[in-house]
Image (cartoon, chains in turn purple, red):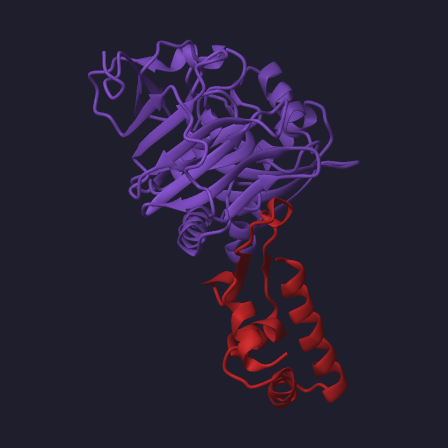
Length: 289
Length: 90
């Protein structure tokens, strides 16, 4: 079989987006993807072509438009490439090693991912998978959030904030009260019609795909007592947007994100919530809805 | 800061007006700054709306003293603080 002819295919359904994966070489995605496999005859929203060689010099001489790194870790660089984007993804154990190079077309629908076949071939290896999921949201009235969400069968309540504010604690409290936890760390919000829905995404552990209506957003922090303040307008939109996953190098992306959160803030109740980490917060929240 | 630099600084933000308030989001390649954004009070909004229409920070100060009942000294400090804040967000 020739280099350009994929001999391995499967489809994923993530947040009701169908992603067709085609690869030169068969591979096993990480455990978290297993429950997201779907019938490949469905309509495809995104196509990911996986190739088994890395064209290391493809961005030679170019400066990245964005570098995702912090003091401890280098994650990926983004380049402008043929009206679309190009990515260099670094190995998370050795930041000087390129793990994948990926190209995304101008419509943000078609990916080509180049990975080395010399060691444990896996084109979706972290952080490539979450990068694909994030870029699925850019042109589809969707966002990816650092947040947890609990669904009690009637209302979907999302809890967001910086690391350590209690997203997982809040999930545990609602789970103990019988709610379904959509996820306790990373979510996709989609605007469908004039309603907003929350979805989980594949994580490093196995979980089934879940979806819930989004009825309220709580920007949480620990507090000596439960206290709540409803946020409106610009403050509600900007404070919620602060917890979405974003690469703020492109004016159009940012403008679309801002518009999304302005619409979200108009449609969904948004609160600042200081909470005591016990079951009392459930009745407190319900009493203020 | 002259008009060219004020315009350049302003172009590195995306703004949206919601219910007469403005949200500013910086265009930045700095991952630590990605989640920083803020809404503007009345004075800051006036500075923002005019910073690419005047020839200097001094002109912005004059505008503030014309629009609001504040001294030149306070207006000048407000303009400087706002511009410094914008720069630190990038």
